[in-house]
Length: 146
Image (cartoon, rainbow, N blue to C red):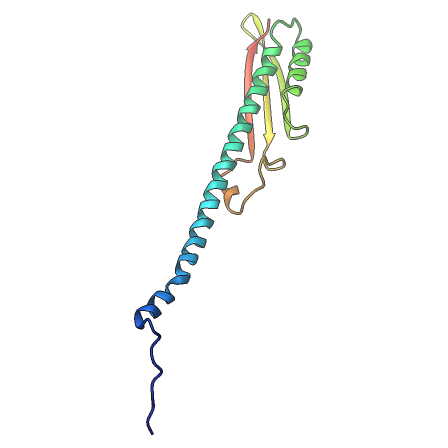
């Protein structure tokens, strides 16, 4: 019995080796693009969180500055509350605390704002990224108002 082996393709065995490598580029691309997208998402998420932290800090500072020139603690708290509400933070996403105390011979007001980042995220959460993001953002500003 005489067995004949099939003839190699016209390009020889080199073309077989080249053809076997064609899917490797697609696999490598899919691995790299997934990692790239995750890193890009992380950069955008941390940028948004940093911008929100800046907004919270500005709201606390503006609220404290609004109390300057007031003569009573109630007027100082009222002015600070109005300015914090006008700062543009999302309603229900933060808590605000106002405290007045004497500092030397004058009065001081402390405005504290706590933003709930877990309950009101600024960007949809990604799997695993929640390990690195804070749960709350807070800022405190103190001014002497009289």
